Image (cartoon, rainbow, N blue to C red; front, side, top):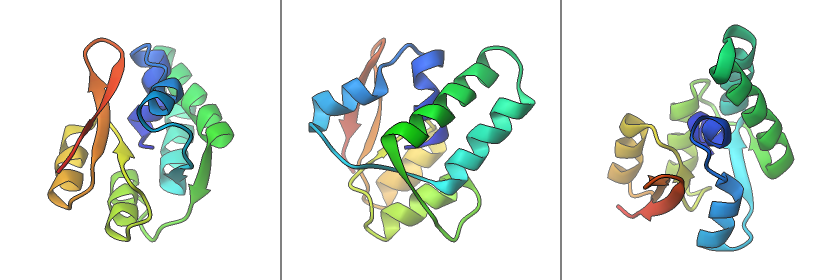
Length: 123
């Protein structure tokens, strides 16, 4: 789960975890510590909707995801590292550059399609 994926419920009105259940059924979700760090920084430094979305995203991550350590301190690099190591089956993100990196590396990406639905893009 990427930072922007965890912020989707507030920013895009997407029920991320319901959508993931629809796509995959019950699954074990993970997020790198770098994503939590980014969410906490955004929550502390941002006002308005972005700050609220980051705070909600942090809460959702701690409730629904296992937090994993990586060598990377930058969230996008941490997600690519997990994909490269084969520790994730897919990554949930709407970040275009990250999406391209993941697809080029052979990792499926889940992102928003339409108004508030998630869909899988295979490499």
